[in-house]
Length: 431
Image (tube, rainbow, N blue to C red; front, side, top):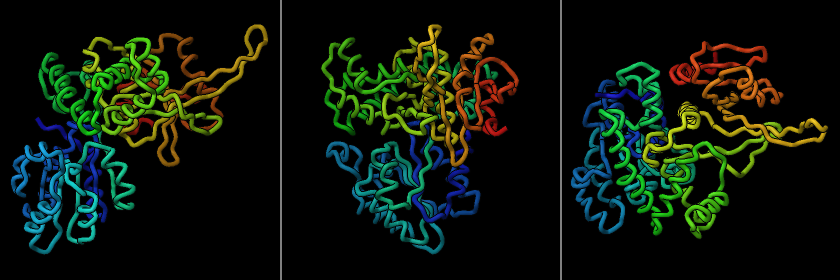
């Protein structure tokens, strides 16, 4: 069964022939290769591009490497990248006519000196280059530096809920429950049965993500790294920092792991796109607060598999889903902080911080969003909107709830919408 990824396909189509290297990044198995080598490839063919003017090459494919005289097993044994000279000879043998050639290159980080190779192709007017990669350390950060402003990143996430529902056989209510449990990795979504889905997720974690992170970063104490991942999985959406995590290790694991080592491990997780961090932002002071941060998993299925599906809190899971949806739509997402000073019953001034779950920015647009699993009464609603009423600016304020409610504004101009409308209607925030 094919899963359409029109959101990302349109991004690639709009970037054709723009003189930049199109770099598709994202967690392994989120669908990058399928987007590039299937959906975009067929778009090119349908647009009239001759098949021999589309050069597809996957650097993790034994068959493709054989074409250039490389051996995947030998590369693994020698712990090296693919020889760039052999690859460039192959490309020269393919580019033999006039007209535009499209290079669709998969897992480019496995090619030695890939930055220099790609920059070389940029100088050729008859080549349009599209690449995928699964590692921010070698790709996203290099787009700005090595490509000197000539890299154009398209970051890809696992299936959004809207994409998930195009292949899910059921209503949106049951669909969201399954989505929050097993996530949106296409390989998992297309499997039948809970047992099979869980097995695939666990295998992906052990055989791909953990192995990839430890191998790439030469991690010696794999047990500590996995323990940290388990702690993060058990506390998604909770404020934390390396020092606090170190104390958890000391108390629970009797471990002497240092805060610096934890900081490195967190970077490894973010570089592999397993997790993302949201910084705190002082809304009144208009300044960032460096620590603590919140961490969210790029896929809830992976998070749940990490803790053997034992800990499923709907509140935190819904918050993670909302965060991922906002990031997929292109928003920069922070955690809002509002310092307030209030008097208690005895007239004593008490200083505290109210929290806005998400401060979302995109260009000049900003939205404040609260994730409220349920609003059973006015007291709960008053609690959720209290931070909004302390914000002086006129940017839109929104409460997203799992309650089945029609979108409506209250007397303070605060919009309440249900999670289904939010996830299935990309333009809902603008209405």
